[in-house]
Length: 250
Image (tube, rainbow, N blue to C red; front, side, top):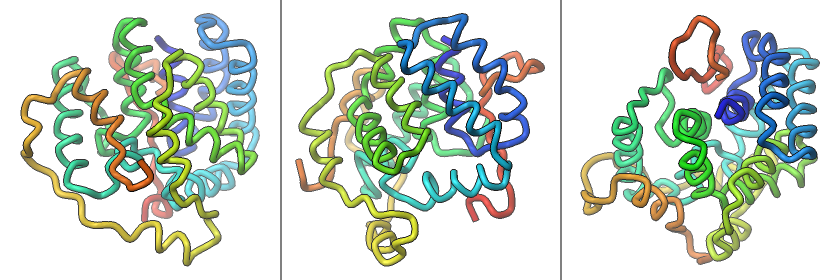
């Protein structure tokens, strides 16, 4: 499902390659026609917004939203496990899921980086892809609400993911996420407090038999906290467009 590759690409750090791919991304959305009309229009508006901005302005906005603001992190397990030990085991299991599915990420991002997760989903059958996208539906819904509050066009991606999955949201997990702090990127004191967490530890744990789609689903629903690619024309396989600059992820 190439529409998922479009949504994946839109959540990567803005680059010249991403901007150049704008017409093809819009064409894919029209050809596949899997998004609802209003979602397709909103995602198309985001594509135009990114392509029409000064590149450095687009990159600065991305960093403020997704790198600097923990409540908008694009790492799925950040919203489920925080920096607990459970996150390390969940990462290991997610890597195994990718390997079992024959998917090899082409970036150095952590396996729970949302663009990678969407790229993997895009390699599956439509039915399996929709099931996978539905598993973190409560995370997508929370991110949609937080971005909508900021009047960010990036909310369109998460609205599309929630609609596409047609999954029944885990209301308890969603309520937990709604209760999490959601500071603005210029509130440095609140941001520092939000990032004060225990160290994450990777390695074997007690969930040795929790790999696979069902195991992933349970990990994406385990709220730890108290309140409950575009594919390049030269590439033969899935690829997320991730361009890093010295100022990015410093």
